[in-house]
Figure 1: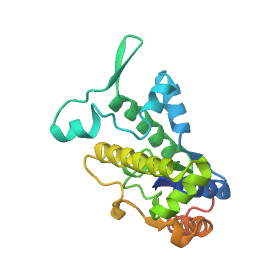
Figure 2: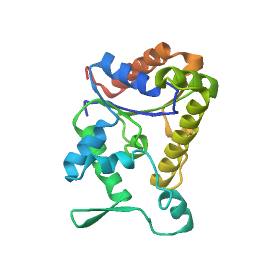
Figure 3: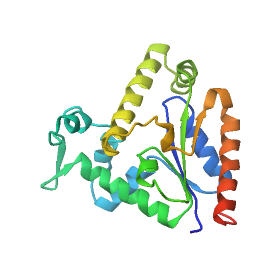
Figure 4: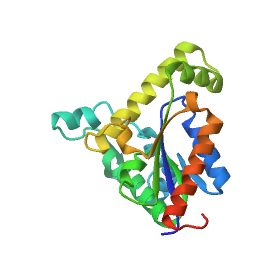
Length: 214
């Protein structure tokens, strides 16, 4: 074992994606978020748009609501004469995540990566969150939208992510601190300091595992 994998779960607007990207850049490793969808599309031979449509989302007519009721998943796609379920699309993404963890040091954002890679000594799992006012301000600035639109994006996206995580982890909670090595409040700690703290923790982990360089 000579690689480190950092998984980052994040609340919408918390700066988690920026933090993940900056950590990866500083460490000289790749950061995977939507690139996982591209790789899953290439692996499966399916249109990437199928993966984009279920990107950390559970369909209203299937997914977690159906799971809770003990009903079969209702949502599927027909492509090249075959049905492709949301679960099958997830499995392709899961395979990409497992392959990445076996072959390289990297940062993986979202996609239930912390759960998929749980129990591995070389995995550092992070959760980045912040108070709503902080997330609203960042979302308004980055998306160039008003407060109402920003609020809707935060509520909707976080709900999608929470339900997606709960479904694919068989009932676990996305915000459960036990799932993670570190849970950081990006408003209180600051974006810069979050990056530094994570990089310091990576060094501690590398020393513990006897890894000299990534």
